[in-house]
Every structure is written in C-alpha cells, then in structure tokens.
Image (tube, rainbow, N blue to C red; front, side):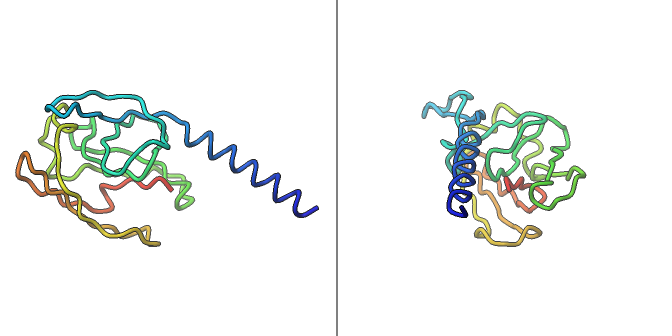
Length: 149
C-alpha cells in the first residue's frame, strides 16, 4: 500500500513539474548585430545569463537579478511566501548604478557577473556586473535579487 501511495504522489509531482516547466516568459534574443527582440520561451528553456522580462503579478521563472524596473527608482515588489512563509511583499530594486540606463538599452548590454556561489543562506548574497559597453561596474546585493524558491 505504501508503494502505491508513493507512486501516486510521484506521478502528481511529475505532472506539476511539467506544468511549471511549460509556463511561458519573455526572453531577449540577440541577432548578433546589435539588435534583437523579445520572444516567448518556456521556463524549462531558460539559460543562465539570459535577459528575462517580467510583468506585474507574474510568477518568477528563475532566480532573477533585477536590472531595470518601470518604476523610476528601480523598485519592484515581490511575494516571497514560498521562500520564507511571510505574506507581506518585499521591496527589491535595480542596482543604483543601472538606474540611469534607458530601458531599450538594457537587453543589448553585455558583461560578466561575479557573485557568491549558491548556498543555503537566504539573507546574504553579493555580486557585481562588469558591463563592457558602458565601462561600468554594478554592485549587486540581495536587495537586487529575486529568488525563485
């Protein structure tokens, strides 16, 4: 009986995983010549380093480093209940060094992210992005990071 129950629960988890992995988000696809466009992509096809566009009241498809917000101060509000059980929204922001960059330029930026390795701590994370085209270093902290959970 226990084996049947575990099989049933495993099948339910696989179905739920398929549903989540097939959700759609928007990613920027560069054309290699300084242009590109936003395209629909399944969550399961996301790769590290891709630019992801999120909209109000949508789920986060992965751990996301905020580079831009429609708010002039770079603020976004995030529900973290699946991470910490708290029901209040958390304020996150784009790095201060990125606030003067126009939205249309963000997807075309290239750089290198250096950051802490994944770990069990939910209250500490540091990194920086060296952005080559504009010769700028963005300092990043947990305040700029949205965790998928």
